[in-house]
Image: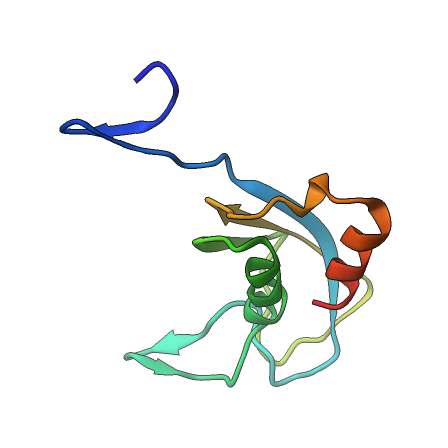
Amino acid sequence: CVCGCVCEAGQVIMERDPIFVKGRYLKWSRELSQTMWIIGGQKKTETSVEEIIAGPMCAVWGCESTKFISAGREDVDVRMMGEGRPFAIEMANCKRDISKRGGEERDDLLINM
């Protein structure tokens, strides 16, 4: 299709461009993994930096899925201090675009995630 849509047998499925959010995170816990840690179908940690950051963002933007992109890796027992580790979240096919909202309303949504 010329519109950039996915076309299937007479159907048109509309998808939005992904939204990217970047930032830095600090991790003081030595029991928190950077991303979901699953071995043999078992989750090895209760939660992860990825889930703590991406979960609320996905809820606010109403996205179908997220990808957590970090600048480097760290073991679960390593703390991230100082200026923090850079990261980005790619949110796919978001239903809401809060960047179009007014400054205070948008800031309140982000702060209260």
